[in-house]
Length: 254
Length: 358
Image (cartoon, rainbow over all chains, first blue to last red; front, side):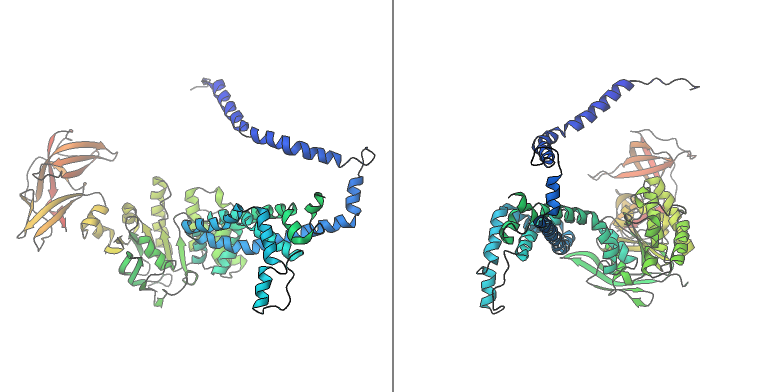
């Protein structure tokens, strides 16, 4: 070779090709970007701008001051977070074992279970929420049966309170937790658990030291989705919770 | 018998899935400190047997003893075995050190002792200094070494390995075979090794158990299995061999009407198979008393580096083609020049190498 400069054949052309490929890839995001910009970024940005405009039409923080000073607003914030956290926790407690169970099944049975999890989506949210109202109200099916078989002497107040809100919201949110969690659990190498137990871990120990840490990405994703959806949830709390008193997103619609 | 290993005694182990026998009445003894390979094609039941030893599969019935201790009813975590899996099964959320220290942590070993044994195990598998790495930063060969270190760190008396080298490339695999064998000789644990690679089994094992369709076909040293296969299946599965149909009448053996001589006489008449290892057959021009001669035509001649493989169609009256493979070592001093494709040749096979199976 002796220091001879290598001829860089087609270097410029190949760089152009690489640039074009990257441009094409970027182009794939264009429909989404247009959609989001037109329908979300611009209107929300406008709303955000308006939030800094006072009654007199000039720049002011008065809207934010009202928010932090009004007890009603603070109460609504607290309730919103409380309900959202509770719903998320209950979803985790119910959803985690179910997702675990499904991840241990053969693919065929797991798919059948998955259909079961997804079937509620076929019915409108509104219909499902009213169905809960029918079931849970004072003279509803559940109270009637419990009264008839003598389980209770007074009807239990399930709806128009936190209990009703939680029942309805957990029911609606559960699939959002199970889907990412199940997908994550499926991808965990079963041999890892076998390895743990061959190395001396009891099933409980193997679960907490190996399976649970490996399921955390799915669990976190699920919890996050449910929590964020809960914060902005309107219909179910409005119907089962009993009016504007309970949930923050209610207030947004007043 | 050393105290660092245990013998394994397997009796009547049977496992069915619906009506399909995964294991059919398997009984075998593995001596303390022995390197035993379970060899078979995929789906033969060899892995099922290993899983029975590890406790991950419960047989329908049968007994497995480690030393004097019946373990068949014990869960895996109480069996005290080290195990290496095909796809490493390393814990992805732990570092190399944490992976290797895991069994020690479970056993309540102090931090100082754990660290010492982890370093020792990593040195044994030649990974000293990589302890802080994440598992994802390792190559395939390094991952398998970590898995091995993790399996031996607590000095188990029995080591089980499920096709541990099958994911590695050929050159690395062959290096690791030698290393694993050396490691076994140093640590002296009873080792049960599962593989479908007959060459690997021959290279590494003290003894080999050949399993097919859930049945134990033959148990013996690599030499016994290679030189004296019990039956057609093993002759075909172990090594490369050409199988020639022969018939036995009144103690005399005939191939295509011509009598041939064999090393060990057969008692009963009927159809048998002559096993011809390609490296034992040779091109010849002269007849000799203790050599069987076959005539044929060269179909193909393949250069394979260390040798030339000749594919020869034997002259035969039967409708089916009878193919004989002959391996001529590269650079060997043969009396006869390498024949060209299409040329008629005579193939010699010493009587001592002429072995029949049913």
